[in-house]
Length: 140
Image 1 (spheres, one colour):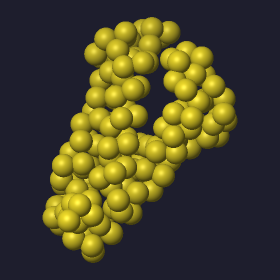
Image 2 (cartoon, rainbow, N blue to C red):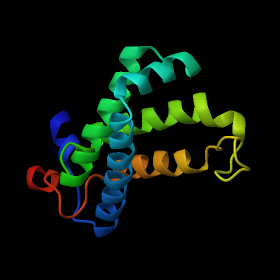
Image 3 (cartoon, rainbow, N blue to C red):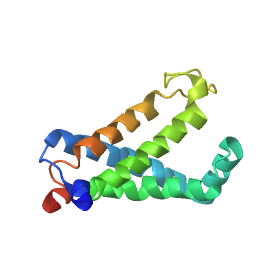
């Protein structure tokens, strides 16, 4: 059944570490965007990268609530997919033109390096599930 594949996971501690790492990073990043003004952030994305405002709002929603999903280990696969899409768009629209490496001289922008790592972590969760210490394991 399709719904079963959303929850199925093994009690892997490695997946729990990856999942919790995503929770920390995306919580901190989304709270920063919300504190700076979600509307301002969404407007800037629209102006700089031509991201429609409803898509920008969906991105912040996915980051914020995805961090809680990762923390609890609940519905991690759908949120992992959402985070992967968010990171793909960030790499494509904001970071690709700056190359691969994160660190550049001030004012030059950052490459895709960090976004790629987050994308791959989310991909690992999409494939492997929530792992140990998760609510998903209770349903699998």
